[in-house]
Length: 79
Image 1 (cartoon, one colour):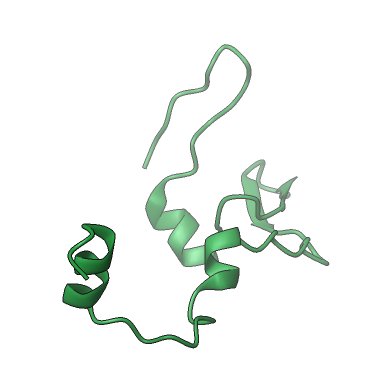
Image 2: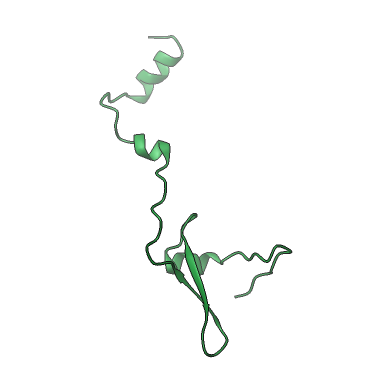
C-alpha cells in the first residue's frame, strides 16, 4: 500500500490502516523508526479526549416523541 508525500510533507494514512488502529479524526499518533529503518505508527499514549459533537450531545435527549407526519404537519402549518 503506498501513498504520495505532499509538498508540505504530509501523507494520507490509508483507510485500512486507520481502521486497524482505530484512528479517527483528531486522534493523536506517534511515529517511530525501528531498527530495520521502517516507520512505525501507533496511537499516542494518553490520547486526548475528542470534543463531543454538539448534535451527538443532544441526540436522544428530547422528551417529546414526535411522529414524522405530525411534525411535518406542524411545520407546514397544517396542524
